Image 1: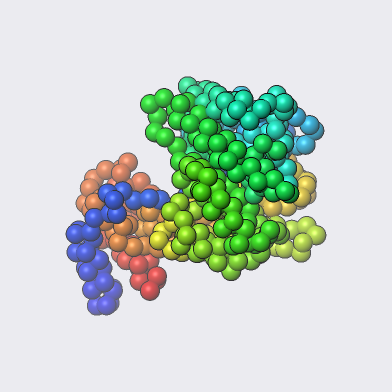
Image 2 (image 1 turned 60 degrees about the vertical axis):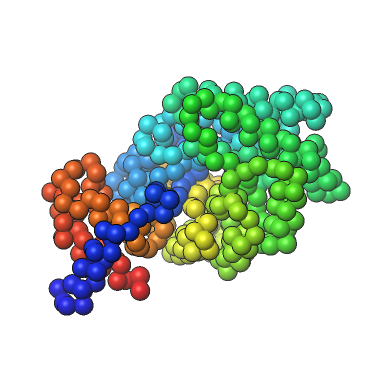
Length: 413
């Protein structure tokens, strides 16, 4: 070890002992995946492999540092579309499974019987004839009952998304704000009523963060449309904690468009920012390759982590395990082995979620917050506390591990 390296290690150690983590906690960057289709995929016989070895898909996610799972829910799933099957029982079972495995859980309410997106926000059939006041009550009660059911069945969400890609509002036409409709007051009332339902359903559990999700990075006007939507929503009193954006290059531009949108959001609004859906093709008619997919994810995570003020809190990849032979399947993070869609191997894109050694907070660099936590484990003989950081198997953090951390610190400069 040369003198320069030894000096940096020593300075970092001394500095770390006097650093206090911001607000007393370290907010970890969210590495997540929407696996709403997972139960159906497994029922259909899909087997997942990591580097050629068959494993439970949640184990594969853990091996690559994903720690959040997103699951959508429909009021009463209807129609024959393959991805529309997530009723309350389905979500409860999958939610309890991921929570039991130690993942955090983002619940995505569509408030529809089928897909809700920028062009479709159809009311559930059971709510189709309700007045605005009755609809406000219905969304509260339904949300409350879903949350309390999940809470009672070991599947309590840690974050809740009210509506899916609601660029033009939701529960049309009551909450519609495009195509000649300006029902902002209705939309805000519906959002706040759903939020109250979350609060009333959680019991003694912590209040989940509330996400409002749009798809406005570039499509539909980009920054101008983003400002139009959130300025109005906030002006009408909607209460929420996180702004969620979708980002698919197919529709939403390139990484520079994303950066401009993130920077704008961070500068104008107080809420944190999340890429709630992301995806890129690895094959098919697009001409894309696994290398393209990996580069997209590397860049995406780096751009979100670089959001000003630390407001970029995470990324969810949409349906990485949906591998059945379809357009959605060509965006998966697994590919068929020898053309067999029931036996699939992990693609290199999954590795984009891997943390850097010593990056405890998960923000893409080894910084003073990581150093504070790392030094708190110095010479502590505790296998559980040092799990994931202990490199030589002795359950103690010593200069051996500190040297690895310091090398990554130097690499960031």
